[in-house]
Length: 497
Image (cartoon, rainbow, N blue to C red):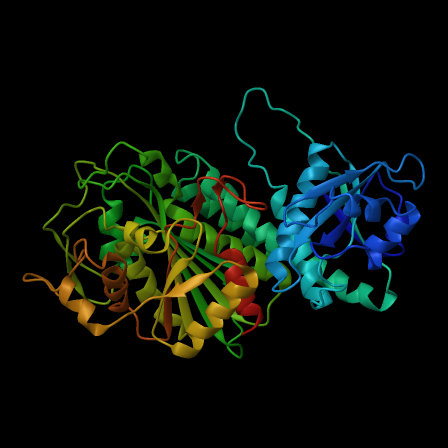
């Protein structure tokens, strides 16, 4: 879908479909919706008066001008209540509008920036949200089907603004959204791919292509490289894998020591059987999404490269399968991580924290101002916060925590702070090693975080995205399947660093 921004009156726009909006308390539209209403001789006002248009959130009304204006149809998208309307409301409205246009087989669509009029939202942010909602709602995974359906596709989306002074800001918002959406698309694609395709080698190839396209520095380490760096925890998980493991490092502004350094670490278990501590058969297929953290980091690196953020950002993704091979690591093994900490293996299904351990240790070599890891780590986080609601957040720095929470509110990729009390370490005490890799059922989301803390010596935040990487139902702009969660959150955080 091609995008452009123009100055003009939407009622005079040349397109097959126009999209305007309506709050639920409006009786006579004003602004851009009012201009279309006037051109249609009060047709929108009449529909409101008759109760056929309510402005309820998610509602999409369709009007057919029949030659009164050049457009074949006008879509009126409900915004819901004016009080509390925010950027998420903009994304939802844009998504409902573009999806309805797509269902009607519209090819050339013109829309306004939702929320930048009487709602009073900042115009650049509203333009970004309008574009994000539109682009992300029309995402479709290119599944390997013998016979593919063409489907309805909107070819062009034009954003029109009457006030010429706002056009430049709108263009900036659109450009930002295009860059971020490109990163989300990569993350969604990687999670949606079958695990025999989205192998560690595949993730390395995707990272290499991004690095080549956007002048990022890339390092991809295999078993020998990891052994040289004494990554015993990462290699223990990889022992049972037929697919070669890959420790992927992407660097934006790699040699800019004058810039603040932020390191992102993503769990990259490309398929998780549980290993010797094998999982039940039911829903094991969902474990293709256990690399959702790595996918988010790779997608974020794409987005920040396109945005050319003035930061030194390092993306680290330790990638491997977790398989029950004859060579696989076992419960009761004692493993030594790259910082010398010894780990008693209680469950081979607590493998994500093992690969992250060596990833977090490696992050320290960059002397970072902050490190954020993302991982589909624990079922207990889903129990606590639910699916499609929020990621669990653990932090050693309150200022960074508050900034990430704020980024989550703006992007609507929400995070919820959870405790990282020292007492949780009692659950991972071992009789035969420094720590053990599982603290049992109770407080599992916190005991996994306290485990990871043992491998950090810098300001650090841990995001448990177990309930967020894969959606069972989807929403207005997130289809069922891979969500790309974390990309928009991290970019918002980094843009406001």
